[in-house]
Length: 182
Image 1 (spheres, rainbow, N blue to C red):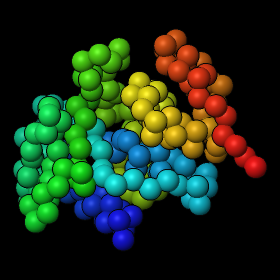
Image 2: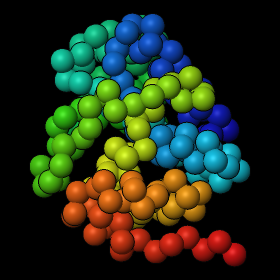
Image 3: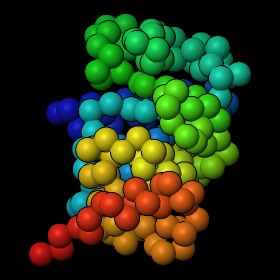
């Protein structure tokens, strides 16, 4: 049921943002899932929330679009999250990442722009693969490393993509073991 809830939420949000002409891109676990699904849908890992990249200058327009579908903007420890008015849990909300800004103060690289995206087979805008890989390597939490293993496992991280990464992120990529294919 949780997977269905996230899928419905992702579709509802992307439909509202598309209708309002808000520039956005899906990032995080749903973006990894969208990319992995292009190769093997059976290897998609589930996620419990939705992460959306947008620009700061359209946040008010995004807030209006989200309000119309029953979501309110809250700030939780500096993170902007849209929560469902009927069930206002930040854990299952829509987390916002601001394009072209550092997600955390200590990050070396800013988040990409929403223009580094394309329309997924599921209909929503999804961040391009090189930008997604860079975001995951920058965060480098255990789940981000697992997502990199997933992308490696379906051979989406090519030598060309790896060479396009900044040296610090390429070094992190090299630290992540190859997936066990047995």
